[in-house]
Length: 41
Image 1 (cartoon, rainbow, N blue to C red):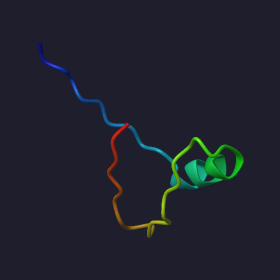
Image 2 (cartoon, rainbow, N blue to C red; image 1 turned 90 degrees about the vertical axis):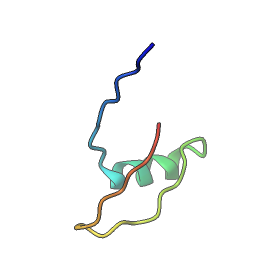
Image 3 (tube, rainbow, N blue to C red; image 1 turned 135 degrees about the horizontal axis):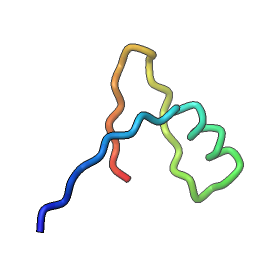
Image 4 (cartoon, rainbow, N blue to C red; image 1 turned 180 degrees about the horizontal axis):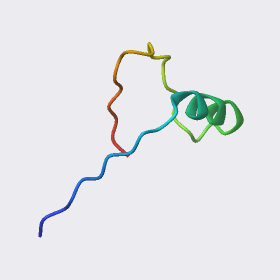
């Protein structure tokens, strides 16, 4: 069985704001605008 990977663009500021409301959401460190952030969901 082969699994296809999908790429998503996520606004990291949205994730940080969501973490401030819900502790179940993992916190992310701020990233520079020109740097790429790769994570797994």
